[in-house]
Image 1: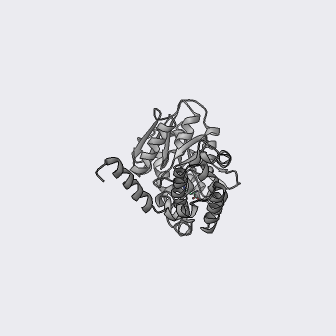
Image 2: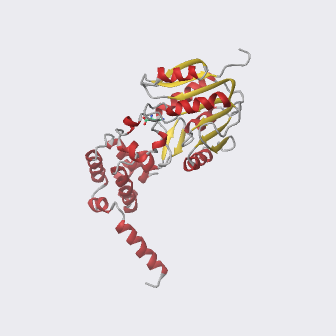
Image 3: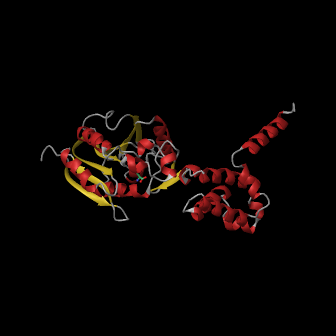
Length: 314
Ligand code: GLN
């Protein structure tokens, strides 16, 4: 075993044999691609995953690309054992209930494709309601945006992608999240206008330095968080989800900062849980924000509360 190449092959074989997904690879040995597909759907369903069919489609598309499933069925040469072994590794993680976004490593949001790890909340379609609201309220003129608790950078990057004159700062208390957000800014070609700062809510930002403040803070009540699907509870960062006993802890903290860092006349817009419209709008009023309103998502649920900082000239 002195030959370095032989050693490399032996090492690779050891890793391969020891990897957790070996039972799946063994079960799939000798099966055709459609048989593997059917088996995977069955296993994901048995693991309690409702989207078993569509998850299987995404996992297969991921490992077969650039060939399609149909291509690979028609021509088995397009489907290698390395790809099926990779599929087994990914499927194994999904069977453990890791979210599909983390298994695939990315998630579409708005028009972007964002990198996702377990250090950030997976961007959700609901949050696009907040992007729409800001675009409705604010035209293309130069503006400085702040996204507090930016996570993957989803809100900040979606808005900067639509408003080419804007600059923005993503703030997060997690250095690991900022790492992901920074990579996403580069991936989207927006790193010349997106900056990132580690800190708690608005603490790191200067008074009246922001024209538009957005945030998707944690807003789930702790008792509700405990009952969430394993995908969310076990694999997504708790501090991006758990808003304390009443779910409102972080709105109080960030609204206190908002009135300090947003300039008079500026906009504040936050994502909320479907049943928090009234109570968060009250918090906006109490913080002294004006022209407060609530916007619904596509499912018809209250999803965004917005308001303006009082203008100095009334
Ligand atoms: N909408 C998310 C969920 O239901 C919660 C996001 C948040 O707390 N900011 O999982």
